[in-house]
Amino acid sequence: MVESVARDRIEKMIYTGKFLIPRPGEVITRGALCVDDDRIAAVGKLDEVVKEFPRHKVREWPDALITPGLVNAHCHLELEFCAGKVEYDGNFIDWLQRVRDLKHDFMVLPGYYPETSIKAIIASGTTTLLDHYTMEMDFRAIEEAGLRYFGFRELFDFNNHCPDERRLREASVFSYAVHSPYTASAEIARSAFRIAHKKGLPISMHLAEMPQELEFIFSHNEDIERLLRRAGAYDESWHGTGKSPVAYFDSLGILSPRTYCVHLNYVSAEDIELLAGRNVTHVYCPRSHAYFMHPEHPLPHFQVAGINSCLGTDSYGSNIDLNVLGEAKLMWAEFPKMPAATVFAMVTTNGLKPLRLDGELGKLERGYRADLAVYTGCDAASFDEIVRWLVNRKSAALVVREGRVIHEG
Image (cartoon, rainbow, N blue to C red; front, side, top):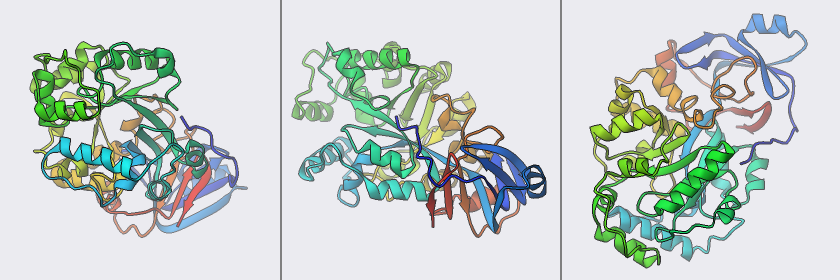
């Protein structure tokens, strides 16, 4: 985990703009917030904040919208090398093998720093990123760039029934991603969950992502067997479980309020009931979903069931950029009746719950960490109109994490 931020360029400052959104569903006209060191000292109308902190500098954008720093709840930073280089021909397993081959061809090695991705993510207004990774990247460089980075080490080894928990404990910069039901053994999944639970950390996973996964977990699928054999990870004793991927992972005891379930594209009514009962957090990646031509996502059913959902960008293997606002834009086009407050929450507060940071980040409130983004040129009026304007933004004019300016464009 990368949590600390270098304390350069932190000033006692009042930021103000045309509009300020402190939390989902609320907008303050001529709003302002006061940043004192790494925390928010006050939020409200400009005159009120200046009256409380008369000696602080004021930085004003007359036409700007100020929001909390955004949260991208699922990404694969290390796949930056895939941009424009991986084709999808309708078979997800073949696509996955192409990504694996390309990683080998590009000689992507430990210490890799995806600089272009980091800069673009921060410039979009994102201050918090949850990332799946398979190799040791240059985590110090990520920290120095200013991004709040939570790295979930992906675990595979489908045929590993005796994982070394000591090695697992040393294998992650933050926590673990049980890659999927078809690539990680039951023992790997349980061990990762057990270690994370003892440390008080969440885990993440791809789950119910594509039809081959459903077939393989229930009984068998030749495409997945071929993938695993090529990786030397096929389990000759595998005969299927007779369950859905969701029910299977639940039987392992790894679905909980500290679990991120990424995708959930193919689920039954029984699966949805189970997920709601376990109080998991669902991460939807709309543009990746569209790239792989999946049918309409069951997101509205999740909302009816009370499942907490947030948004992620996935990777350059299936996306044109890593701007989580682009995900919100497409999601809203798919589900136009979704309330603006829900859309806003899915890129700010919702993704923080398994991290237990929803009481410190995702809102502009007194005492919260001073994460914010400034978007100029806002000509909207109501909260709904402002959010519809926001989801079309490509970049922010200013991004601040814990009081430190980490982007200015």
